[in-house]
Image (cartoon, rainbow, N blue to C red):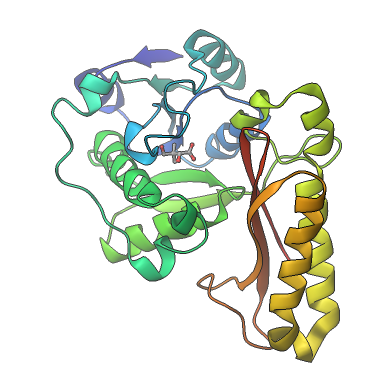
Length: 283
Ligand code: PAF
Protein backbone atom coordinates (compact mmCIF):
# COMPACT_ATOMS: atom_id res chain seq x y z
CA UNK A 1 0.00 0.00 0.00
CA UNK A 2 1.27 3.47 -0.86
CA UNK A 3 0.78 6.44 1.45
CA UNK A 4 0.81 9.83 -0.27
CA UNK A 5 0.44 13.27 1.25
CA UNK A 6 0.32 15.60 -1.76
CA UNK A 7 -2.08 15.98 -4.67
CA UNK A 8 0.83 15.77 -7.12
CA UNK A 9 2.10 12.48 -5.65
CA UNK A 10 -1.44 11.15 -5.67
CA UNK A 11 -2.00 11.99 -9.34
CA UNK A 12 1.39 10.47 -10.28
CA UNK A 13 0.50 7.30 -8.40
CA UNK A 14 -2.93 7.03 -10.02
CA UNK A 15 -1.81 7.85 -13.59
CA UNK A 16 -1.49 4.20 -14.72
CA UNK A 17 -5.01 3.36 -13.53
CA UNK A 18 -8.33 3.92 -15.27
CA UNK A 19 -10.95 3.11 -12.73
CA UNK A 20 -10.36 4.37 -9.18
CA UNK A 21 -12.69 3.48 -6.32
CA UNK A 22 -12.48 6.08 -3.56
CA UNK A 23 -13.39 5.65 0.10
CA UNK A 24 -13.37 9.12 1.68
CA UNK A 25 -12.84 9.07 5.47
CA UNK A 26 -11.76 11.26 8.33
CA UNK A 27 -9.61 8.44 9.71
CA UNK A 28 -9.83 6.70 13.09
CA UNK A 29 -11.03 3.76 11.06
CA UNK A 30 -13.38 1.08 12.36
CA UNK A 31 -14.90 -2.06 10.84
CA UNK A 32 -17.50 0.05 8.99
CA UNK A 33 -14.79 1.91 7.06
CA UNK A 34 -12.98 -1.34 6.30
CA UNK A 35 -16.22 -2.74 4.95
CA UNK A 36 -16.33 0.21 2.52
CA UNK A 37 -12.80 -0.68 1.38
CA UNK A 38 -13.84 -4.31 0.95
CA UNK A 39 -16.81 -3.20 -1.16
CA UNK A 40 -14.58 -0.87 -3.19
CA UNK A 41 -11.96 -3.43 -4.15
CA UNK A 42 -13.90 -5.38 -6.81
CA UNK A 43 -15.29 -2.18 -8.39
CA UNK A 44 -12.29 -0.40 -9.83
CA UNK A 45 -8.69 -1.15 -10.76
CA UNK A 46 -7.24 0.81 -7.83
CA UNK A 47 -8.69 1.35 -4.34
CA UNK A 48 -7.96 4.69 -2.71
CA UNK A 49 -8.83 5.70 0.84
CA UNK A 50 -8.56 9.34 1.82
CA UNK A 51 -7.95 10.38 5.40
CA UNK A 52 -8.59 14.04 6.14
CA UNK A 53 -10.28 15.65 9.13
CA UNK A 54 -12.14 18.40 7.32
CA UNK A 55 -12.30 21.59 9.38
CA UNK A 56 -14.97 23.02 7.04
CA UNK A 57 -17.64 20.58 8.25
CA UNK A 58 -17.14 21.28 11.96
CA UNK A 59 -18.84 24.16 13.79
CA UNK A 60 -16.55 26.10 16.15
CA UNK A 61 -18.02 24.37 19.25
CA UNK A 62 -17.68 20.87 17.74
CA UNK A 63 -14.91 18.28 18.09
CA UNK A 64 -12.51 19.25 15.28
CA UNK A 65 -9.53 19.68 17.65
CA UNK A 66 -10.15 16.48 19.60
CA UNK A 67 -11.22 14.29 16.66
CA UNK A 68 -8.87 11.26 16.92
CA UNK A 69 -6.00 11.32 14.43
CA UNK A 70 -4.61 7.79 14.19
CA UNK A 71 -2.80 7.69 10.84
CA UNK A 72 -0.38 4.83 11.61
CA UNK A 73 -3.09 2.52 12.99
CA UNK A 74 -5.37 3.47 10.07
CA UNK A 75 -2.65 2.63 7.53
CA UNK A 76 -2.04 -0.75 9.21
CA UNK A 77 -5.74 -1.58 8.94
CA UNK A 78 -5.93 -0.42 5.32
CA UNK A 79 -2.85 -2.44 4.39
CA UNK A 80 -4.41 -5.55 5.95
CA UNK A 81 -7.58 -4.88 3.94
CA UNK A 82 -5.65 -4.67 0.66
CA UNK A 83 -6.23 -0.96 0.03
CA UNK A 84 -3.81 0.24 -2.68
CA UNK A 85 -3.35 3.95 -1.96
CA UNK A 86 -3.96 6.18 1.06
CA UNK A 87 -4.24 9.90 0.43
CA UNK A 88 -3.63 11.74 3.69
CA UNK A 89 -3.10 15.40 2.84
CA UNK A 90 -2.21 18.03 5.42
CA UNK A 91 -4.61 20.91 5.86
CA UNK A 92 -2.12 23.16 4.06
CA UNK A 93 -2.09 20.77 1.10
CA UNK A 94 -5.85 20.56 0.67
CA UNK A 95 -6.60 24.15 1.73
CA UNK A 96 -3.41 26.10 0.90
CA UNK A 97 -5.45 29.27 1.24
CA UNK A 98 -8.81 29.79 2.94
CA UNK A 99 -11.36 27.86 0.85
CA UNK A 100 -13.39 30.79 -0.55
CA UNK A 101 -15.18 28.74 -3.19
CA UNK A 102 -17.65 26.39 -1.55
CA UNK A 103 -20.23 23.91 -2.79
CA UNK A 104 -23.54 24.94 -1.28
CA UNK A 105 -26.15 22.18 -1.39
CA UNK A 106 -29.86 23.03 -1.79
CA UNK A 107 -31.66 23.96 1.42
CA UNK A 108 -34.55 21.52 0.94
CA UNK A 109 -32.16 18.62 1.41
CA UNK A 110 -29.25 20.12 3.33
CA UNK A 111 -30.86 22.49 5.84
CA UNK A 112 -33.12 19.85 7.41
CA UNK A 113 -32.30 17.17 10.04
CA UNK A 114 -28.47 17.10 10.33
CA UNK A 115 -28.18 20.38 8.46
CA UNK A 116 -30.67 22.05 10.81
CA UNK A 117 -28.71 21.02 13.90
CA UNK A 118 -25.29 21.43 12.27
CA UNK A 119 -25.61 24.55 10.08
CA UNK A 120 -22.99 24.58 7.33
CA UNK A 121 -22.16 20.90 7.82
CA UNK A 122 -23.21 19.78 4.35
CA UNK A 123 -21.52 22.76 2.68
CA UNK A 124 -18.30 21.61 4.35
CA UNK A 125 -18.90 18.00 3.34
CA UNK A 126 -19.77 18.82 -0.29
CA UNK A 127 -16.82 21.17 -0.64
CA UNK A 128 -14.27 18.61 0.57
CA UNK A 129 -15.88 15.72 -1.31
CA UNK A 130 -15.87 17.75 -4.54
CA UNK A 131 -12.21 18.53 -3.93
CA UNK A 132 -11.34 14.89 -3.17
CA UNK A 133 -13.14 13.88 -6.36
CA UNK A 134 -11.01 16.40 -8.30
CA UNK A 135 -7.85 14.99 -6.75
CA UNK A 136 -8.61 11.29 -7.13
CA UNK A 137 -11.07 10.77 -9.94
CA UNK A 138 -10.64 13.35 -12.69
CA UNK A 139 -7.73 11.92 -14.68
CA UNK A 140 -9.26 8.42 -14.92
CA UNK A 141 -10.81 7.31 -18.19
CA UNK A 142 -12.95 4.38 -17.05
CA UNK A 143 -15.80 4.17 -14.55
CA UNK A 144 -15.11 5.90 -11.24
CA UNK A 145 -16.61 5.01 -7.89
CA UNK A 146 -16.94 6.61 -4.47
CA UNK A 147 -18.31 4.72 -1.49
CA UNK A 148 -20.21 6.10 1.49
CA UNK A 149 -21.78 4.44 4.52
CA UNK A 150 -25.55 4.41 4.96
CA UNK A 151 -25.09 5.41 8.58
CA UNK A 152 -24.73 8.94 7.21
CA UNK A 153 -27.98 8.56 5.28
CA UNK A 154 -28.54 12.23 4.56
CA UNK A 155 -24.88 12.76 3.63
CA UNK A 156 -24.94 10.13 0.91
CA UNK A 157 -28.19 11.63 -0.45
CA UNK A 158 -26.70 15.12 -0.54
CA UNK A 159 -23.61 13.79 -2.32
CA UNK A 160 -25.71 11.85 -4.84
CA UNK A 161 -27.60 15.08 -5.62
CA UNK A 162 -24.34 17.01 -5.99
CA UNK A 163 -23.01 14.39 -8.40
CA UNK A 164 -26.23 14.51 -10.39
CA UNK A 165 -26.50 18.30 -10.56
CA UNK A 166 -22.84 18.83 -11.48
CA UNK A 167 -22.86 15.84 -13.88
CA UNK A 168 -19.78 14.45 -12.11
CA UNK A 169 -18.49 11.25 -13.73
CA UNK A 170 -18.63 9.14 -10.59
CA UNK A 171 -20.85 6.31 -9.40
CA UNK A 172 -21.88 6.72 -5.77
CA UNK A 173 -22.15 3.42 -3.92
CA UNK A 174 -23.90 3.22 -0.54
CA UNK A 175 -22.84 0.48 1.84
CA UNK A 176 -25.04 -0.80 4.72
CA UNK A 177 -24.26 0.31 8.26
CA UNK A 178 -22.01 -1.98 10.28
CA UNK A 179 -23.18 -2.59 13.84
CA UNK A 180 -21.64 -3.83 17.07
CA UNK A 181 -23.03 -7.08 18.52
CA UNK A 182 -25.63 -5.15 20.56
CA UNK A 183 -26.82 -3.22 17.48
CA UNK A 184 -25.00 0.10 18.01
CA UNK A 185 -24.03 1.60 14.65
CA UNK A 186 -20.23 1.75 14.35
CA UNK A 187 -18.89 5.29 14.45
CA UNK A 188 -15.54 6.89 15.17
CA UNK A 189 -17.33 8.95 17.81
CA UNK A 190 -18.30 5.80 19.79
CA UNK A 191 -14.76 6.01 21.16
CA UNK A 192 -15.82 9.09 23.16
CA UNK A 193 -18.36 7.06 25.17
CA UNK A 194 -17.65 6.06 28.78
CA UNK A 195 -18.29 2.43 29.72
CA UNK A 196 -21.80 3.16 31.05
CA UNK A 197 -22.60 5.38 28.09
CA UNK A 198 -21.44 2.63 25.73
CA UNK A 199 -23.95 0.23 27.31
CA UNK A 200 -26.69 2.85 27.02
CA UNK A 201 -25.77 3.90 23.46
CA UNK A 202 -27.74 1.12 21.74
CA UNK A 203 -30.95 2.74 23.01
CA UNK A 204 -30.88 5.20 20.08
CA UNK A 205 -31.18 2.38 17.56
CA UNK A 206 -33.81 0.64 19.71
CA UNK A 207 -35.85 3.85 19.91
CA UNK A 208 -35.62 4.26 16.13
CA UNK A 209 -36.69 0.68 15.51
CA UNK A 210 -39.66 1.15 17.89
CA UNK A 211 -40.61 4.40 16.15
CA UNK A 212 -40.40 2.59 12.82
CA UNK A 213 -42.69 -0.16 14.09
CA UNK A 214 -45.20 2.38 15.45
CA UNK A 215 -45.15 4.24 12.13
CA UNK A 216 -45.82 1.04 10.18
CA UNK A 217 -48.64 0.13 12.59
CA UNK A 218 -50.24 3.56 12.06
CA UNK A 219 -50.59 2.63 8.35
CA UNK A 220 -53.16 5.01 6.78
CA UNK A 221 -53.15 7.20 9.90
CA UNK A 222 -49.40 7.73 9.59
CA UNK A 223 -49.45 11.37 8.57
CA UNK A 224 -51.87 12.27 11.37
CA UNK A 225 -50.11 10.26 14.10
CA UNK A 226 -46.50 10.90 13.17
CA UNK A 227 -45.90 14.10 15.20
CA UNK A 228 -47.14 12.34 18.36
CA UNK A 229 -45.15 9.18 17.70
CA UNK A 230 -41.97 11.19 17.10
CA UNK A 231 -42.56 13.28 20.22
CA UNK A 232 -43.05 10.14 22.31
CA UNK A 233 -39.85 8.58 20.93
CA UNK A 234 -37.86 11.73 21.77
CA UNK A 235 -39.35 11.88 25.27
CA UNK A 236 -38.48 8.21 25.82
CA UNK A 237 -34.81 8.87 25.12
CA UNK A 238 -34.84 12.13 27.08
CA UNK A 239 -36.21 10.25 30.10
CA UNK A 240 -33.12 8.00 29.93
CA UNK A 241 -30.83 11.04 30.08
CA UNK A 242 -30.28 11.67 26.37
CA UNK A 243 -30.65 15.02 24.63
CA UNK A 244 -32.36 14.12 21.35
CA UNK A 245 -32.04 16.48 18.37
CA UNK A 246 -34.56 14.58 16.25
CA UNK A 247 -36.16 11.16 15.88
CA UNK A 248 -38.27 11.23 12.78
CA UNK A 249 -39.86 9.22 9.99
CA UNK A 250 -39.27 10.63 6.51
CA UNK A 251 -39.82 9.53 2.98
CA UNK A 252 -36.75 7.91 1.48
CA UNK A 253 -36.85 9.82 -1.79
CA UNK A 254 -36.08 13.29 -0.41
CA UNK A 255 -36.28 13.11 3.42
CA UNK A 256 -39.42 15.25 3.47
CA UNK A 257 -42.42 14.52 5.72
CA UNK A 258 -44.06 11.43 4.22
CA UNK A 259 -47.44 10.94 2.64
CA UNK A 260 -49.33 7.64 2.91
CA UNK A 261 -47.70 4.94 0.80
CA UNK A 262 -44.21 6.51 0.59
CA UNK A 263 -41.21 4.24 1.21
CA UNK A 264 -39.91 5.35 4.59
CA UNK A 265 -36.72 5.80 6.57
CA UNK A 266 -36.52 6.52 10.27
CA UNK A 267 -33.63 8.76 11.28
CA UNK A 268 -32.35 10.08 14.57
CA UNK A 269 -29.63 12.08 16.27
CA UNK A 270 -29.16 12.45 20.00
CA UNK A 271 -26.49 13.43 22.45
CA UNK A 272 -25.44 11.07 25.22
CA UNK A 273 -23.23 13.03 27.60
CA UNK A 274 -20.82 14.86 25.31
CA UNK A 275 -21.18 12.42 22.40
CA UNK A 276 -23.59 13.04 19.54
CA UNK A 277 -24.74 9.83 17.84
CA UNK A 278 -26.80 9.33 14.68
CA UNK A 279 -28.51 6.29 13.21
CA UNK A 280 -31.24 5.31 10.73
CA UNK A 281 -33.20 2.37 9.37
CA UNK A 282 -35.17 1.99 6.19
CA UNK A 283 -38.58 0.59 7.16
O1 PAF B 1 -18.38 10.75 6.45
C1 PAF B 1 -17.27 11.26 6.65
O2 PAF B 1 -16.37 10.69 7.27
C2 PAF B 1 -16.99 12.66 6.11
O3 PAF B 1 -18.13 13.46 6.19
C3 PAF B 1 -16.41 12.67 4.70
C4 PAF B 1 -17.38 12.11 3.68
C5 PAF B 1 -15.11 11.87 4.67
C6 PAF B 1 -16.08 14.11 4.27
O4 PAF B 1 -15.15 14.70 5.14
